[in-house]
Amino acid sequence: MPLHTRHLLGLEGMKREDIQLILDTAVSFREVLERPIKKVPPLQGKTIANLFFENSTRTRLSFELAERRLSADVLGFAASGSSVAKGETLKDTARNIEAMKIDMVVIRHSAAGAPHYLSRVIRSNVINAGDGAHEHPTQGLLDMYTIREKLGRLEGLHVCILGDISHSRVARSNIFGLLTMGAKVSVCGPATMMPRGIENLGVEVYHHLDDVLPRIDVLNVLRIQMERDAGRLFPSIREYHNFYGVTRQRLEKAGRDITVMHPGPINRDVEISADVADGEHSVILQQVLNGVAIRMAVLYLLSSMN
Amino acid sequence: MRQLKAVIIDEAGMERTITRLAHEILERNRGAGNIVVVGIRTRGEFIARRVAATIERVERVALQIGYLDITLYRDDLLGKLEQPQLKGTEILFDITGKDVILVDDVLYTGRTIRAALDELMDLGRPRTIQLAVLVDRGHRQVPIRADYVGKNVPTSSAESIRVHVREVDQEDAVLLMHPETPEP
Image (cartoon, rainbow over all chains, first blue to last red; front, side, top):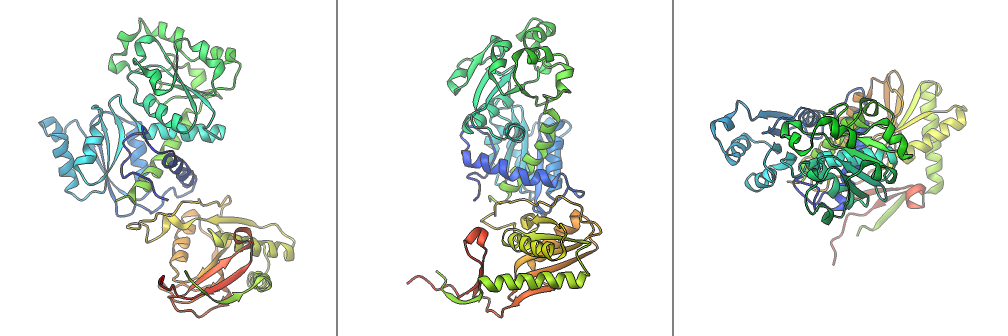
């Protein structure tokens, strides 16, 4: 039973059975990652280009590792110091790379919709590794995988996403994916970080962390993106931490066993306190490991969709 | 639709064949001391379980048993439209230094076994790998032979063999089917 799509551009509108297939397939790859030789041959002879027009360490390493562990050949590309700096368009860059006979493209770009555009102008399978504030589908999938691994299901769980919802592609991919899989989703954060009309997506909106904590099973903590000038959205880091920082004390007061996630990289003692990040509620490092398995599953499943 | 040509092994025959395979394995290995059993998914999994259960009964030992999903090691994966669903490999023990009894239902082209050998080698370094199959139907495309064969069945490559196991198909039987006839 194959996927219903040739590309992974976002989780919005993705069929439930496709998400299910990716999550189930990732279980097999998770097992491969525990082997003495963590490499299997299904993508032998395939070439994958990683086009990262925007900085990334974790996602880029994770994709590269997933590609190598499937035995694909990997092409790297970073926008700085490349022909992009000389003014080449996205279309020309991609077509030139594709002319070298590649099979799949993984793209990260600061412009929302760049992967969608690319999928229309090149023949390769396109995987969105984050486009602007739009979507980051493999992050959404690995978050769902991690929740399912920890709690055994997604259906009927209540997941809250905390932080700067407006500027978060992680939040959007999680919302679309989790709602499709039958989870209940809330968002929490200051009004300046809440996009207008967010409740129309089918999520509940909270502005006080202590209100939502007693109701939820999972808390997905977003990073405060200081590099995107988040400083103008709240008075000070200390104030943000006082109102929205996830601390052990807060979690204990909620009286529930809440699983805490974070897409990384963490600002310790800003959005999450160090003892929570390293504590027994946290599945942050499992997310990183599961990310490789999810990306292997996505690459493997898309590789047969030509 | 394929029509039934012959019942090659029936319910009682299956029992006897598996018992004989188990005894041959024990004889060749002088007991079950260093043996682990690995079945190839999906039908080989059930045959492996029964072979292992028989060995356990005869020798009064507990055997380690695992299952191999060779999908990721297939040589026809690229360019194939129907991508098979992964069922996953489950070998929760170290095969290094062991005598691995690899079990499958039907030995045909040998390509599945080639893939299984590659995957096993990636999982560790067994002392030996021995192949046990319920049916050998010939038509090898790679130089592979079985160490233990339940039954040799000469077939034409247009025919097909169906292995039914109680756990999935409600009956134990090996059936030889006529070549596919076009719908009238």
